[in-house]
Image (tube, rainbow, N blue to C red; front, side, top):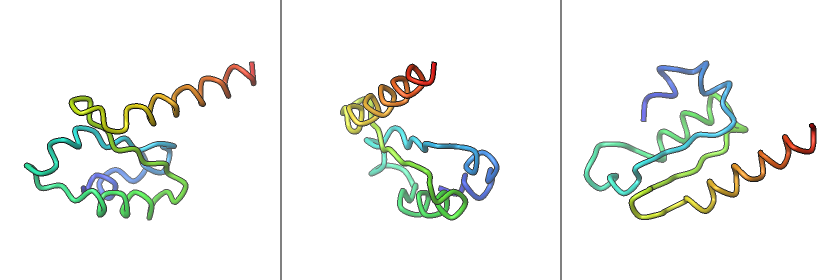
Length: 77
């Protein structure tokens, strides 16, 4: 959860923060809310998605995010 503070340039340039392996959160020391807050201090426009490929959590939202970006790129040619 301290990565935004360690790598601020990466978070400033990013448009999306994917927090993966959310199914493991009960077993690890990781504060999702703190991570998101730190990332948004650096980049308030940052979109955040929380995913788990094991449970499927958030996969539909991420797929739609990708499709929306692909559509936008296709329109700009």
